[in-house]
Length: 187
Image (cartoon, rainbow, N blue to C red; front, side):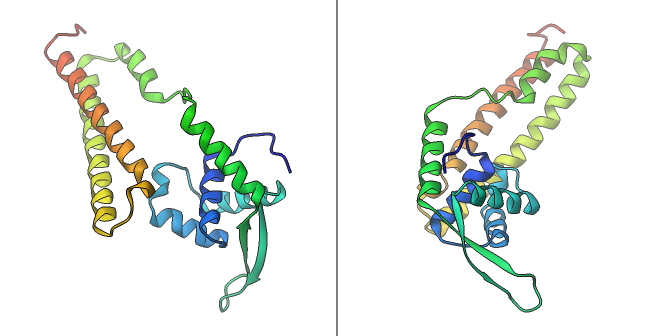
């Protein structure tokens, strides 16, 4: 079945897991959270179940069986179809090759920061720097853990990209804060 709309980030994550092996949505959710994929994709268990249902309706995945563990509800296991693997590969190729302006909020806030007193802006930038540095520390710990476990870097290359992005933003925001504080940028 042909897809008319591109795969969402959650759809890409779900198909990526099912390429590894057939599994049920709850297992997929647990694995995504264990791998800290929520840094890249907004993950909610109910949304993931709905996404798997949409992928099945589109002919990209198919149920392979249902099992029950004790008193728990039945769980349907899904496997990726050839069409699903092709859709995943196509979307990954598109995402890797084509820059997209995702309209992040921070540049807009910077464009309107002049509406706040400089002291407030300095305090807010300091708060942002603290949060960015905490995020970088988490990524550094994740990279160290992956390295110590011998996980091939190709499986966590996104962490390196995020580290680079955070380091660049930390440097830029720190420089902006210093320029405002020293009057290099008159406020």
